[in-house]
Image (cartoon, rainbow, N blue to C red):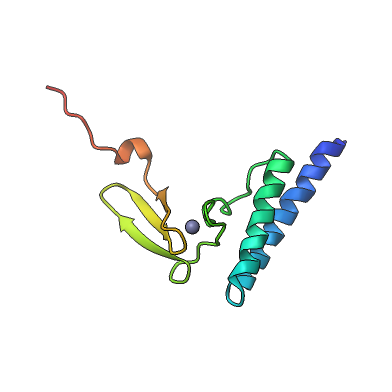
Length: 113
Ligand SMILES: [Zn+2]
C-alpha cells in the first residue's frame, strides 16, 4: 500500500498537469491568469518536493512564469549544427536550449594529433 506522502505526491502531480492545461487555455484570453497558474504549479512542485511532470518544465519559462507557445509567447530557432532548438521567451528574452541530438555527439569533436 502506498504511503500518505506518495499519495499526496501523485495527487499533486495530477493537479500540476491540470494547472498546465488550464494555463494554456487561459493564455489566449488573460496572460496574468495563465501566469498565476504556472506560479502555483511551481509552488506545488517545491512544496511536495516533486519534479515538474513531463514536458511542462520544457514548455514554461521559469523566469516570467509564462507558457511557451511557439508563435505566441516564444520564438523558436533551430540551431542545426549544434543539435538543439532554442525557445526564446517573448516576455523576458530567456532562452531554453532543447537538445534533439545526444549532447556528446553534437559537441565539436577534438581531433587527435
Ligand atoms: Zn520568460
